Length: 179
Ligand SMILES: NC(=O)c1ccc[n+]([C@@H]2O[C@H](COP(=O)([O-])OP(=O)(O)OC[C@H]3O[C@@H](n4cnc5c(N)ncnc54)[C@H](OP(=O)(O)O)[C@@H]3O)[C@@H](O)[C@H]2O)c1
Image (tube, rainbow, N blue to C red; front, top):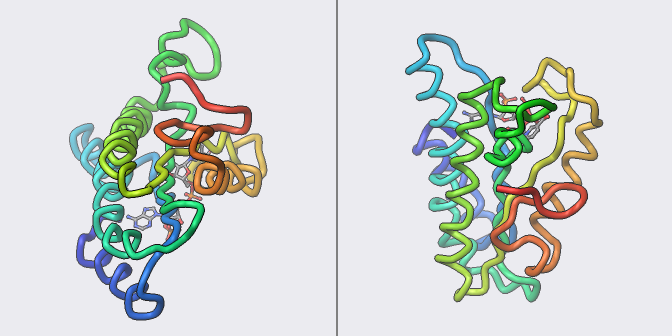
């Protein structure tokens, strides 16, 4: 995600083997990075924001070759921590006092996603983002409350549900989350 060369090599490998791509789920992300505040921001944004956008750009020609009747699909990975509305709550799980760098990167993903949703909808693309909820993974030292399989289901939902349910939205288990 932090190497254009590697991302384009991945796209080339898919092109050589399949010639097209129907669904792109962009999931990789990090929550922390070593170094100064500036370096921490740079690395987290490089992976979570630039990496997701560069991956979409690299795979776009293959997605355009898709003949899937259900539409060409792109699903980004956001987070419940991305929501500005929830961050402004004075108390509670999502109050904006924690993880400012990670959550800022996910708020940025929430704007990258509608860019592609609007840009590509006339070509038959359906573009959304998922919020898996707090899952026990390496990202949070396995402190999350949910099984990662449940989180994966939300990403699959973002990549397969109807256009009305996901296009231009950040979806969670229940529906779409506030901006
Ligand atoms: N866990 C949660 O509670 C939660 C909640 C909301 C959203 N999310 C989001 O869900 C996504 C997946 O995270 P996770 O919870 O499953 O965490 P994880 O277990 O740490 O998995 C992160 C994945 O991203 C990959 N990755 C990280 N940096 C990369 C890079 N530069 N290039 C390529 N791959 C890279 C990792 O690959 P390696 O293993 O090879 O390093 C790993 O497969 C992330 O976007 C995260 O922000 C997680």
